[in-house]
Image (cartoon, rainbow, N blue to C red; front, side, top):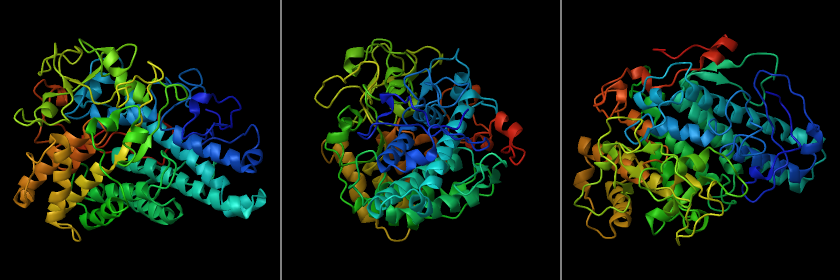
Length: 542
Protein backbone atom coordinates (compact mmCIF):
# COMPACT_ATOMS: atom_id res chain seq x y z
CA UNK A 1 0.00 0.00 0.00
CA UNK A 2 1.58 3.28 -1.08
CA UNK A 3 1.51 6.52 0.87
CA UNK A 4 0.52 9.11 -1.70
CA UNK A 5 -1.80 11.80 -2.87
CA UNK A 6 -3.63 10.57 -5.96
CA UNK A 7 -4.49 12.90 -8.82
CA UNK A 8 -7.29 10.68 -10.08
CA UNK A 9 -9.76 10.45 -7.19
CA UNK A 10 -13.19 10.29 -8.78
CA UNK A 11 -16.31 12.27 -7.94
CA UNK A 12 -17.49 9.26 -5.96
CA UNK A 13 -15.53 10.69 -3.03
CA UNK A 14 -17.62 13.85 -2.84
CA UNK A 15 -19.24 14.27 0.55
CA UNK A 16 -20.44 17.28 2.47
CA UNK A 17 -20.89 19.13 -0.79
CA UNK A 18 -17.10 19.30 -1.29
CA UNK A 19 -15.29 18.23 -4.46
CA UNK A 20 -12.46 15.80 -3.69
CA UNK A 21 -8.89 16.38 -4.71
CA UNK A 22 -6.89 13.62 -3.17
CA UNK A 23 -6.65 10.62 -0.91
CA UNK A 24 -3.95 10.66 1.73
CA UNK A 25 -3.04 7.00 2.00
CA UNK A 26 -0.69 6.42 4.91
CA UNK A 27 0.44 3.25 6.63
CA UNK A 28 2.01 3.34 10.07
CA UNK A 29 5.12 1.41 9.13
CA UNK A 30 5.92 2.47 5.58
CA UNK A 31 8.07 5.22 4.15
CA UNK A 32 6.03 8.08 2.65
CA UNK A 33 6.33 9.32 -0.91
CA UNK A 34 3.97 11.96 -2.20
CA UNK A 35 2.67 12.95 -5.63
CA UNK A 36 2.13 15.82 -5.95
CA UNK A 37 4.16 17.21 -3.06
CA UNK A 38 2.63 17.65 0.34
CA UNK A 39 3.59 21.30 0.24
CA UNK A 40 1.60 21.96 -2.93
CA UNK A 41 -1.52 20.60 -1.24
CA UNK A 42 -1.19 22.22 2.16
CA UNK A 43 -0.23 25.63 0.78
CA UNK A 44 -3.72 25.88 -0.71
CA UNK A 45 -6.50 26.27 1.92
CA UNK A 46 -9.12 25.00 -0.54
CA UNK A 47 -7.19 21.78 -1.00
CA UNK A 48 -6.75 21.41 2.74
CA UNK A 49 -10.52 21.39 3.07
CA UNK A 50 -10.74 18.79 0.32
CA UNK A 51 -8.31 16.53 2.19
CA UNK A 52 -10.52 16.94 5.26
CA UNK A 53 -13.46 15.83 3.13
CA UNK A 54 -11.54 12.67 2.30
CA UNK A 55 -11.15 11.90 6.00
CA UNK A 56 -14.92 11.95 6.37
CA UNK A 57 -15.33 10.01 3.13
CA UNK A 58 -13.25 7.16 4.54
CA UNK A 59 -16.25 6.18 6.67
CA UNK A 60 -18.39 5.92 3.52
CA UNK A 61 -16.15 4.74 0.67
CA UNK A 62 -13.11 2.51 0.49
CA UNK A 63 -11.35 3.41 -2.74
CA UNK A 64 -10.19 6.20 -4.99
CA UNK A 65 -12.69 5.96 -7.81
CA UNK A 66 -15.77 4.03 -6.60
CA UNK A 67 -17.48 1.68 -6.52
CA UNK A 68 -14.49 -0.59 -7.20
CA UNK A 69 -11.17 -0.69 -9.02
CA UNK A 70 -8.79 1.40 -6.91
CA UNK A 71 -9.07 0.21 -3.29
CA UNK A 72 -7.45 2.19 -0.50
CA UNK A 73 -6.06 -1.00 1.03
CA UNK A 74 -4.42 -3.47 -1.34
CA UNK A 75 -5.34 -7.14 -1.26
CA UNK A 76 -8.91 -6.81 -0.03
CA UNK A 77 -12.20 -6.31 -1.85
CA UNK A 78 -13.20 -2.65 -1.98
CA UNK A 79 -16.88 -3.08 -1.16
CA UNK A 80 -16.29 -5.78 1.44
CA UNK A 81 -13.71 -3.72 3.36
CA UNK A 82 -15.82 -0.57 3.69
CA UNK A 83 -15.58 1.00 7.18
CA UNK A 84 -19.31 1.36 7.81
CA UNK A 85 -20.11 -2.07 6.36
CA UNK A 86 -17.54 -3.76 8.58
CA UNK A 87 -18.55 -1.74 11.63
CA UNK A 88 -22.22 -2.59 11.11
CA UNK A 89 -21.48 -6.30 10.70
CA UNK A 90 -19.24 -6.42 13.79
CA UNK A 91 -21.85 -4.69 15.93
CA UNK A 92 -24.97 -6.40 14.55
CA UNK A 93 -24.27 -9.84 13.04
CA UNK A 94 -22.56 -10.91 16.26
CA UNK A 95 -25.69 -10.15 18.34
CA UNK A 96 -29.37 -10.96 18.71
CA UNK A 97 -30.36 -8.40 16.05
CA UNK A 98 -29.10 -9.68 12.69
CA UNK A 99 -27.96 -12.74 10.76
CA UNK A 100 -26.50 -13.00 7.24
CA UNK A 101 -27.43 -15.69 4.74
CA UNK A 102 -24.20 -15.74 2.74
CA UNK A 103 -22.69 -18.68 4.58
CA UNK A 104 -20.63 -19.74 1.59
CA UNK A 105 -18.69 -16.46 1.88
CA UNK A 106 -15.60 -16.66 4.05
CA UNK A 107 -16.20 -15.14 7.44
CA UNK A 108 -20.00 -15.13 7.50
CA UNK A 109 -20.59 -18.40 9.42
CA UNK A 110 -18.13 -17.36 12.13
CA UNK A 111 -19.85 -14.01 12.69
CA UNK A 112 -23.26 -15.69 12.75
CA UNK A 113 -21.99 -18.13 15.39
CA UNK A 114 -19.41 -16.08 17.36
CA UNK A 115 -16.62 -18.47 16.40
CA UNK A 116 -14.13 -16.15 14.68
CA UNK A 117 -10.35 -16.56 14.89
CA UNK A 118 -7.38 -14.18 14.51
CA UNK A 119 -7.28 -14.95 10.79
CA UNK A 120 -10.94 -14.05 10.26
CA UNK A 121 -11.31 -11.79 7.16
CA UNK A 122 -13.98 -9.52 8.69
CA UNK A 123 -11.91 -8.99 11.82
CA UNK A 124 -8.89 -8.08 9.75
CA UNK A 125 -10.92 -5.78 7.48
CA UNK A 126 -12.37 -3.86 10.44
CA UNK A 127 -8.98 -3.59 12.13
CA UNK A 128 -7.23 -2.45 8.95
CA UNK A 129 -9.94 0.09 8.20
CA UNK A 130 -9.70 1.62 11.70
CA UNK A 131 -5.94 2.04 11.53
CA UNK A 132 -6.00 3.22 7.93
CA UNK A 133 -8.31 6.05 9.03
CA UNK A 134 -6.07 6.83 12.01
CA UNK A 135 -3.08 7.00 9.65
CA UNK A 136 -4.85 9.46 7.36
CA UNK A 137 -5.82 11.63 10.31
CA UNK A 138 -2.29 11.55 11.71
CA UNK A 139 -0.88 12.86 8.44
CA UNK A 140 -3.48 15.63 8.20
CA UNK A 141 -2.82 16.68 11.81
CA UNK A 142 0.93 16.54 11.21
CA UNK A 143 0.68 18.84 8.20
CA UNK A 144 -1.67 21.41 9.75
CA UNK A 145 0.18 22.39 12.90
CA UNK A 146 0.59 26.13 13.47
CA UNK A 147 4.28 25.88 12.63
CA UNK A 148 3.59 24.07 9.35
CA UNK A 149 0.88 26.52 8.35
CA UNK A 150 3.28 29.41 8.96
CA UNK A 151 5.89 27.65 6.84
CA UNK A 152 3.30 27.21 4.09
CA UNK A 153 2.47 30.91 4.16
CA UNK A 154 -1.18 30.44 5.15
CA UNK A 155 -2.88 33.70 6.16
CA UNK A 156 -4.07 34.28 9.72
CA UNK A 157 -7.71 34.14 8.64
CA UNK A 158 -7.25 30.86 6.82
CA UNK A 159 -5.27 29.45 9.73
CA UNK A 160 -8.35 29.99 11.89
CA UNK A 161 -10.42 27.87 9.49
CA UNK A 162 -7.76 25.19 9.23
CA UNK A 163 -7.44 25.07 13.01
CA UNK A 164 -11.08 23.93 13.07
CA UNK A 165 -10.36 21.38 10.31
CA UNK A 166 -7.49 20.07 12.43
CA UNK A 167 -9.81 19.73 15.42
CA UNK A 168 -12.22 17.73 13.24
CA UNK A 169 -9.39 15.45 12.15
CA UNK A 170 -8.45 14.92 15.80
CA UNK A 171 -12.09 14.10 16.53
CA UNK A 172 -12.21 11.55 13.69
CA UNK A 173 -8.98 9.98 14.93
CA UNK A 174 -10.35 9.83 18.48
CA UNK A 175 -13.55 8.22 17.22
CA UNK A 176 -11.59 5.53 15.38
CA UNK A 177 -9.44 4.93 18.45
CA UNK A 178 -12.72 4.63 20.39
CA UNK A 179 -13.79 1.92 17.93
CA UNK A 180 -10.43 0.19 18.45
CA UNK A 181 -10.86 0.47 22.23
CA UNK A 182 -14.35 -0.99 22.03
CA UNK A 183 -13.66 -3.86 19.65
CA UNK A 184 -9.99 -4.77 20.08
CA UNK A 185 -8.94 -3.40 23.47
CA UNK A 186 -5.12 -3.38 23.47
CA UNK A 187 -3.89 -2.15 20.11
CA UNK A 188 -1.01 -0.47 18.27
CA UNK A 189 -0.73 3.26 18.85
CA UNK A 190 0.67 6.09 16.77
CA UNK A 191 -0.13 9.78 16.60
CA UNK A 192 1.14 12.76 14.62
CA UNK A 193 4.42 12.74 16.57
CA UNK A 194 5.23 9.15 15.63
CA UNK A 195 8.05 8.52 13.20
CA UNK A 196 6.69 6.99 10.01
CA UNK A 197 8.63 4.11 8.49
CA UNK A 198 11.37 3.65 11.10
CA UNK A 199 9.72 1.96 14.06
CA UNK A 200 6.79 -0.31 14.81
CA UNK A 201 3.87 1.27 16.68
CA UNK A 202 3.91 0.51 20.38
CA UNK A 203 1.15 -1.43 22.13
CA UNK A 204 -1.30 0.64 24.16
CA UNK A 205 -3.47 -1.06 26.77
CA UNK A 206 -7.15 -0.35 27.20
CA UNK A 207 -7.03 1.99 30.25
CA UNK A 208 -4.33 4.16 28.68
CA UNK A 209 -6.22 4.29 25.38
CA UNK A 210 -9.38 5.25 27.28
CA UNK A 211 -7.48 8.16 28.85
CA UNK A 212 -6.04 9.18 25.47
CA UNK A 213 -9.42 9.29 23.73
CA UNK A 214 -10.86 11.22 26.66
CA UNK A 215 -8.03 13.76 26.64
CA UNK A 216 -8.11 14.23 22.86
CA UNK A 217 -11.84 14.93 22.81
CA UNK A 218 -11.59 17.36 25.70
CA UNK A 219 -8.59 19.11 24.14
CA UNK A 220 -10.29 19.60 20.78
CA UNK A 221 -13.92 20.30 21.66
CA UNK A 222 -13.49 24.06 22.04
CA UNK A 223 -11.97 24.29 18.54
CA UNK A 224 -14.92 22.50 16.96
CA UNK A 225 -17.93 24.39 15.67
CA UNK A 226 -20.67 24.96 18.26
CA UNK A 227 -23.40 22.32 18.23
CA UNK A 228 -25.69 22.44 15.19
CA UNK A 229 -23.64 25.13 13.37
CA UNK A 230 -21.33 23.05 11.16
CA UNK A 231 -22.11 21.64 7.72
CA UNK A 232 -24.31 18.56 8.02
CA UNK A 233 -22.01 15.56 8.13
CA UNK A 234 -19.10 17.38 9.79
CA UNK A 235 -18.32 17.02 13.47
CA UNK A 236 -19.22 19.75 15.92
CA UNK A 237 -19.05 20.01 19.69
CA UNK A 238 -22.12 17.81 20.13
CA UNK A 239 -20.39 14.97 18.24
CA UNK A 240 -17.42 15.21 20.63
CA UNK A 241 -19.77 15.26 23.64
CA UNK A 242 -21.47 12.15 22.25
CA UNK A 243 -18.26 10.14 21.99
CA UNK A 244 -17.24 11.30 25.45
CA UNK A 245 -20.60 10.19 26.83
CA UNK A 246 -20.23 6.80 25.16
CA UNK A 247 -16.72 6.45 26.51
CA UNK A 248 -17.96 7.13 30.04
CA UNK A 249 -21.05 4.96 29.59
CA UNK A 250 -18.85 1.96 28.83
CA UNK A 251 -16.14 2.74 31.39
CA UNK A 252 -17.11 -0.27 33.58
CA UNK A 253 -16.18 -2.48 30.60
CA UNK A 254 -13.22 -0.56 29.19
CA UNK A 255 -11.59 -0.12 32.62
CA UNK A 256 -12.30 -3.65 33.85
CA UNK A 257 -9.31 -5.79 34.73
CA UNK A 258 -10.76 -8.88 33.03
CA UNK A 259 -12.09 -9.39 29.48
CA UNK A 260 -15.86 -9.25 29.48
CA UNK A 261 -15.94 -7.80 32.97
CA UNK A 262 -17.98 -4.79 34.05
CA UNK A 263 -16.09 -3.94 37.22
CA UNK A 264 -14.34 -0.80 35.97
CA UNK A 265 -15.03 2.61 37.44
CA UNK A 266 -18.60 3.79 36.97
CA UNK A 267 -18.67 7.15 35.18
CA UNK A 268 -22.44 7.63 34.98
CA UNK A 269 -22.19 11.16 36.37
CA UNK A 270 -20.08 12.19 33.36
CA UNK A 271 -22.58 10.51 31.03
CA UNK A 272 -25.26 12.75 32.49
CA UNK A 273 -23.03 15.83 32.15
CA UNK A 274 -22.33 15.32 28.46
CA UNK A 275 -25.75 14.07 27.38
CA UNK A 276 -27.25 17.14 29.05
CA UNK A 277 -24.92 19.32 26.98
CA UNK A 278 -26.22 17.60 23.84
CA UNK A 279 -29.86 17.75 24.84
CA UNK A 280 -29.63 21.41 25.89
CA UNK A 281 -27.98 22.47 22.61
CA UNK A 282 -31.21 22.57 20.62
CA UNK A 283 -31.65 19.15 19.04
CA UNK A 284 -35.23 17.91 18.69
CA UNK A 285 -36.77 14.53 17.95
CA UNK A 286 -37.88 14.03 14.36
CA UNK A 287 -41.66 13.82 14.24
CA UNK A 288 -41.80 10.54 12.33
CA UNK A 289 -39.41 7.76 13.32
CA UNK A 290 -39.14 6.29 9.81
CA UNK A 291 -37.94 9.61 8.38
CA UNK A 292 -34.62 9.09 10.17
CA UNK A 293 -33.78 6.32 7.69
CA UNK A 294 -34.88 7.80 4.36
CA UNK A 295 -33.03 9.56 1.53
CA UNK A 296 -34.00 13.04 2.73
CA UNK A 297 -32.99 12.48 6.35
CA UNK A 298 -30.39 15.23 5.90
CA UNK A 299 -33.29 17.68 5.86
CA UNK A 300 -36.38 16.14 7.49
CA UNK A 301 -34.40 14.52 10.31
CA UNK A 302 -31.62 17.07 10.64
CA UNK A 303 -32.93 18.27 13.99
CA UNK A 304 -32.21 14.85 15.54
CA UNK A 305 -29.14 13.52 13.76
CA UNK A 306 -25.96 14.66 15.49
CA UNK A 307 -23.47 13.05 13.11
CA UNK A 308 -24.22 10.96 10.00
CA UNK A 309 -22.11 9.06 7.51
CA UNK A 310 -23.22 10.75 4.31
CA UNK A 311 -24.12 8.99 1.06
CA UNK A 312 -25.12 10.18 -2.38
CA UNK A 313 -26.19 7.72 -5.07
CA UNK A 314 -24.54 9.76 -7.79
CA UNK A 315 -21.34 10.86 -6.06
CA UNK A 316 -20.55 8.26 -3.38
CA UNK A 317 -20.65 4.90 -5.12
CA UNK A 318 -19.71 1.94 -2.96
CA UNK A 319 -20.86 -1.63 -2.45
CA UNK A 320 -20.37 -1.13 1.25
CA UNK A 321 -22.11 1.36 3.48
CA UNK A 322 -25.79 1.99 2.82
CA UNK A 323 -25.63 0.01 -0.44
CA UNK A 324 -24.89 -3.10 1.59
CA UNK A 325 -27.25 -2.28 4.47
CA UNK A 326 -30.26 -1.70 2.20
CA UNK A 327 -29.69 -4.22 -0.61
CA UNK A 328 -28.65 -7.08 1.68
CA UNK A 329 -31.84 -6.70 3.73
CA UNK A 330 -34.15 -7.30 0.75
CA UNK A 331 -35.17 -10.73 -0.51
CA UNK A 332 -38.01 -13.26 -0.58
CA UNK A 333 -41.35 -11.56 -1.28
CA UNK A 334 -40.06 -8.09 -0.41
CA UNK A 335 -40.66 -5.54 -3.19
CA UNK A 336 -37.52 -3.83 -4.46
CA UNK A 337 -39.66 -0.85 -5.47
CA UNK A 338 -40.62 -0.30 -1.85
CA UNK A 339 -36.92 0.14 -1.08
CA UNK A 340 -36.02 2.23 -4.15
CA UNK A 341 -33.47 -0.29 -5.41
CA UNK A 342 -32.93 -2.45 -8.48
CA UNK A 343 -32.63 -5.80 -6.72
CA UNK A 344 -32.32 -7.42 -3.33
CA UNK A 345 -29.26 -9.39 -2.26
CA UNK A 346 -31.14 -11.77 0.05
CA UNK A 347 -28.76 -11.47 2.97
CA UNK A 348 -29.64 -9.92 6.33
CA UNK A 349 -32.68 -10.63 8.50
CA UNK A 350 -33.37 -10.32 12.19
CA UNK A 351 -33.71 -12.89 14.93
CA UNK A 352 -36.78 -13.55 17.05
CA UNK A 353 -35.19 -11.84 20.04
CA UNK A 354 -35.59 -8.44 18.41
CA UNK A 355 -39.10 -9.14 17.12
CA UNK A 356 -40.16 -10.26 20.60
CA UNK A 357 -39.13 -6.89 22.05
CA UNK A 358 -42.23 -5.44 20.42
CA UNK A 359 -45.43 -6.62 22.18
CA UNK A 360 -48.25 -7.30 19.74
CA UNK A 361 -50.62 -5.45 22.05
CA UNK A 362 -48.84 -2.16 21.36
CA UNK A 363 -48.71 -0.49 17.95
CA UNK A 364 -45.07 0.52 18.04
CA UNK A 365 -44.17 2.26 14.77
CA UNK A 366 -40.52 1.32 15.27
CA UNK A 367 -41.33 -2.35 14.60
CA UNK A 368 -40.34 -2.41 10.92
CA UNK A 369 -40.46 -6.09 10.05
CA UNK A 370 -41.46 -8.08 6.96
CA UNK A 371 -43.07 -11.43 7.80
CA UNK A 372 -44.87 -12.48 4.59
CA UNK A 373 -43.18 -15.71 3.54
CA UNK A 374 -40.65 -15.38 6.37
CA UNK A 375 -40.52 -17.58 9.45
CA UNK A 376 -39.82 -16.18 12.88
CA UNK A 377 -37.59 -19.12 13.75
CA UNK A 378 -34.19 -19.56 12.11
CA UNK A 379 -33.28 -23.16 11.41
CA UNK A 380 -30.90 -22.52 8.50
CA UNK A 381 -28.88 -19.30 8.60
CA UNK A 382 -28.25 -19.57 4.85
CA UNK A 383 -31.98 -19.49 4.06
CA UNK A 384 -33.15 -15.91 3.66
CA UNK A 385 -36.75 -16.74 4.54
CA UNK A 386 -35.63 -17.96 7.97
CA UNK A 387 -36.02 -14.86 10.11
CA UNK A 388 -38.13 -11.74 9.60
CA UNK A 389 -36.98 -9.10 7.16
CA UNK A 390 -36.19 -5.61 8.40
CA UNK A 391 -37.58 -2.62 6.48
CA UNK A 392 -35.95 0.16 8.49
CA UNK A 393 -33.53 1.60 5.94
CA UNK A 394 -34.72 2.51 2.44
CA UNK A 395 -33.49 4.35 -0.64
CA UNK A 396 -36.78 6.23 -0.65
CA UNK A 397 -37.63 9.70 0.63
CA UNK A 398 -40.10 10.56 3.35
CA UNK A 399 -42.51 11.36 0.48
CA UNK A 400 -42.05 7.93 -1.12
CA UNK A 401 -39.77 9.06 -3.96
CA UNK A 402 -36.93 6.71 -4.91
CA UNK A 403 -33.33 7.89 -4.68
CA UNK A 404 -31.30 9.19 -7.61
CA UNK A 405 -29.73 5.80 -8.28
CA UNK A 406 -31.32 2.40 -7.66
CA UNK A 407 -27.98 0.72 -6.98
CA UNK A 408 -26.31 3.30 -4.75
CA UNK A 409 -28.59 4.86 -2.11
CA UNK A 410 -28.85 8.51 -1.10
CA UNK A 411 -29.72 7.65 2.51
CA UNK A 412 -27.32 8.88 5.19
CA UNK A 413 -26.48 6.58 8.09
CA UNK A 414 -27.13 8.16 11.53
CA UNK A 415 -24.05 7.41 13.64
CA UNK A 416 -25.31 9.52 16.54
CA UNK A 417 -28.73 10.99 17.21
CA UNK A 418 -30.65 12.67 20.00
CA UNK A 419 -32.75 9.61 20.88
CA UNK A 420 -29.55 7.79 21.86
CA UNK A 421 -28.52 10.72 24.07
CA UNK A 422 -31.93 10.50 25.78
CA UNK A 423 -31.48 6.79 26.43
CA UNK A 424 -27.92 7.25 27.66
CA UNK A 425 -29.15 9.85 30.16
CA UNK A 426 -31.90 7.48 31.31
CA UNK A 427 -29.47 4.60 31.80
CA UNK A 428 -27.03 6.78 33.72
CA UNK A 429 -29.82 7.86 36.07
CA UNK A 430 -30.90 4.25 36.64
CA UNK A 431 -27.27 3.37 37.42
CA UNK A 432 -27.21 6.10 40.09
CA UNK A 433 -25.25 8.81 38.29
CA UNK A 434 -25.16 12.18 40.02
CA UNK A 435 -26.58 15.26 38.35
CA UNK A 436 -29.65 13.70 36.77
CA UNK A 437 -33.18 13.12 37.98
CA UNK A 438 -35.58 10.23 37.60
CA UNK A 439 -38.33 12.66 36.65
CA UNK A 440 -36.29 13.96 33.71
CA UNK A 441 -35.36 10.42 32.69
CA UNK A 442 -39.04 9.47 32.61
CA UNK A 443 -39.76 12.53 30.44
CA UNK A 444 -37.07 11.61 27.92
CA UNK A 445 -38.08 7.95 27.70
CA UNK A 446 -41.74 8.78 27.33
CA UNK A 447 -40.95 11.24 24.54
CA UNK A 448 -39.51 8.34 22.55
CA UNK A 449 -42.46 6.10 23.35
CA UNK A 450 -45.01 8.74 22.44
CA UNK A 451 -43.37 9.14 19.04
CA UNK A 452 -43.37 5.37 18.65
CA UNK A 453 -47.01 4.81 19.66
CA UNK A 454 -48.50 8.10 18.56
CA UNK A 455 -49.96 8.61 22.03
CA UNK A 456 -49.22 8.17 25.72
CA UNK A 457 -50.34 4.52 25.87
CA UNK A 458 -46.79 3.28 26.34
CA UNK A 459 -45.70 5.76 28.98
CA UNK A 460 -43.71 4.55 31.96
CA UNK A 461 -43.46 5.93 35.49
CA UNK A 462 -40.61 6.54 37.89
CA UNK A 463 -41.28 3.18 39.54
CA UNK A 464 -40.33 1.46 36.28
CA UNK A 465 -36.81 2.92 36.40
CA UNK A 466 -35.57 1.26 39.55
CA UNK A 467 -33.08 -1.55 40.14
CA UNK A 468 -32.72 -4.46 37.75
CA UNK A 469 -36.22 -3.82 36.41
CA UNK A 470 -35.09 -0.38 35.30
CA UNK A 471 -31.91 -1.68 33.68
CA UNK A 472 -33.82 -4.37 31.78
CA UNK A 473 -36.28 -1.75 30.57
CA UNK A 474 -33.46 0.50 29.35
CA UNK A 475 -31.69 -2.28 27.45
CA UNK A 476 -34.95 -3.35 25.81
CA UNK A 477 -35.82 0.21 24.91
CA UNK A 478 -32.39 0.68 23.34
CA UNK A 479 -33.11 -2.42 21.26
CA UNK A 480 -36.47 -1.06 20.11
CA UNK A 481 -35.18 2.43 19.33
CA UNK A 482 -31.68 1.78 17.97
CA UNK A 483 -31.73 -1.66 16.34
CA UNK A 484 -29.58 -2.05 13.22
CA UNK A 485 -27.79 1.24 13.97
CA UNK A 486 -24.56 -0.35 15.22
CA UNK A 487 -25.03 -0.22 18.99
CA UNK A 488 -26.18 -3.68 20.04
CA UNK A 489 -22.90 -5.53 20.64
CA UNK A 490 -21.56 -2.76 22.85
CA UNK A 491 -24.88 -2.54 24.72
CA UNK A 492 -25.09 -6.27 25.43
CA UNK A 493 -21.51 -6.36 26.70
CA UNK A 494 -22.12 -3.41 29.02
CA UNK A 495 -25.24 -5.07 30.44
CA UNK A 496 -23.40 -8.36 30.96
CA UNK A 497 -25.59 -10.23 28.46
CA UNK A 498 -23.29 -10.76 25.51
CA UNK A 499 -21.25 -13.84 26.31
CA UNK A 500 -23.26 -15.55 29.03
CA UNK A 501 -26.74 -15.77 30.46
CA UNK A 502 -28.64 -14.62 27.39
CA UNK A 503 -28.80 -16.41 24.06
CA UNK A 504 -30.02 -16.07 20.51
CA UNK A 505 -30.19 -18.37 17.48
CA UNK A 506 -26.84 -19.92 16.52
CA UNK A 507 -24.84 -18.08 19.16
CA UNK A 508 -21.94 -20.38 19.94
CA UNK A 509 -22.80 -22.59 16.94
CA UNK A 510 -25.97 -24.02 18.50
CA UNK A 511 -29.39 -23.43 16.95
CA UNK A 512 -30.98 -22.46 20.27
CA UNK A 513 -27.90 -20.47 21.26
CA UNK A 514 -25.41 -21.16 24.02
CA UNK A 515 -22.93 -19.29 26.20
CA UNK A 516 -19.53 -18.39 24.78
CA UNK A 517 -16.28 -17.48 26.51
CA UNK A 518 -16.02 -13.99 27.95
CA UNK A 519 -13.01 -13.41 25.71
CA UNK A 520 -15.51 -13.07 22.84
CA UNK A 521 -16.32 -9.60 24.14
CA UNK A 522 -13.13 -8.55 22.34
CA UNK A 523 -12.13 -9.40 18.81
CA UNK A 524 -8.63 -10.82 18.32
CA UNK A 525 -5.84 -8.83 16.78
CA UNK A 526 -5.30 -10.11 13.21
CA UNK A 527 -2.54 -12.66 12.80
CA UNK A 528 -1.06 -10.56 10.00
CA UNK A 529 -0.42 -7.61 12.32
CA UNK A 530 0.90 -9.74 15.16
CA UNK A 531 3.42 -11.22 12.74
CA UNK A 532 4.45 -7.81 11.43
CA UNK A 533 4.71 -6.03 14.77
CA UNK A 534 6.46 -7.79 17.67
CA UNK A 535 5.31 -5.03 20.05
CA UNK A 536 1.78 -6.43 19.97
CA UNK A 537 0.26 -9.14 22.12
CA UNK A 538 -2.82 -11.22 21.31
CA UNK A 539 -5.98 -10.73 23.34
CA UNK A 540 -6.65 -13.49 25.91
CA UNK A 541 -8.42 -16.58 24.63
CA UNK A 542 -7.14 -16.37 21.07
